[in-house]
Structure formats: C-alpha cells, structure tokens
Length: 215
Image (cartoon, rainbow, N blue to C red; front, side):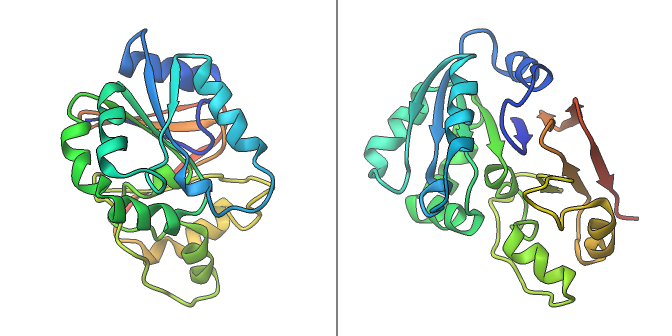
C-alpha cells in the first residue's frame, strides 16, 4: 500500500517528487472533493489543489456523494492515483461509509497511490480524533469520542501545524493533548507530508513536522 498524507496537497517540489516516485511518470488522478461540499467559505485552496495535481497528471473530479457507486467506482479504477481532498472530516467520513468506498479501499489501493489532503489524511487512522471538531475539545479537557476512521494506518495525523488558519494547532498544545491518543501522532505543517510505502514511513518536508511517540 502506497500513501502520501499531506496538509495541503502538492504544496512544493519535494512532495511532488515523492508522489512521482510512488506513482510513476504518467499519472491519471481521480480527485475526490467531497469533504469540501459543506464548506461555505471561499475555496481558493480547493482550486489550488486541483491546479497542483493538474501540473503532474490528468485529473478527473469524482464526488462520491453526488454519484452512485456504479458511476464512481469505474472512474477510480481507471486512475493510478486517488486523491482525497480537504474540508469537513466528519462529513467526508460519513460519505466514505455511506457510499461504500471504505469497503473498496483494500482492493483499490493494491495497485494505486492514495493521496490525502488534510481531512483526506485524517480519515485513514483508526479514528478521526485529530479533526478540529474533536481535537479542540481535548484542549478544553472535554474528551469526546470521535467516529471511527478507515483504519488503514496505525498512527494519527494532524495537518496544518503552526498554520495561521488553525491557531490552536501548535507543538505546545499538541503535546498537552497527546496523552489522550492511543497511537503515535505525526503533526505536519503545510509543507510536509508522510510517505507510507508498503509499511515503510518517511517524512518529506520543506517546512516543520513533529512526531509524538507512545512509550
């Protein structure tokens, strides 16, 4: 299984090159924008994500909440890269289950690269505890159980470390709440990404990242 887990997609050349190594030179990318559907603010970030993917391959936009499985599954099967965009993590996870995509991942990812962007990275863990709506409750000492994630990885990912758009996501705050997590936690800024290549983990970065380890 080959995964590239990011905060903001193909934000720099290091991350782009990491994807090229995983996927090869010719990329047919299926981009799932579903997490952004209920975000009402401007979506320049979504457009930027699509442009960045368009710079490395051909892009098909596949919304799993708008299409029946008989339409979206063949389009994912035609791709060699499946990119899952950012937005509302709970909404994305709801549709991953409702659409049946969660049951298709094991087969799809035998021969395809998965790229997660923010919410798309978070959902692969055992739970979506690192999504903002649950993580911020931990800052207030209100531990609230988060829904289960897809469970493809045995560590947690928190995107947007030190981002001005997420002012609570700092190294100090993450260190405080890490006691509530069961697995190792990788905190990535917007210029960092995790490369998961058949079990081997490497971080590529032109910015800042931190790993919090259990015991």
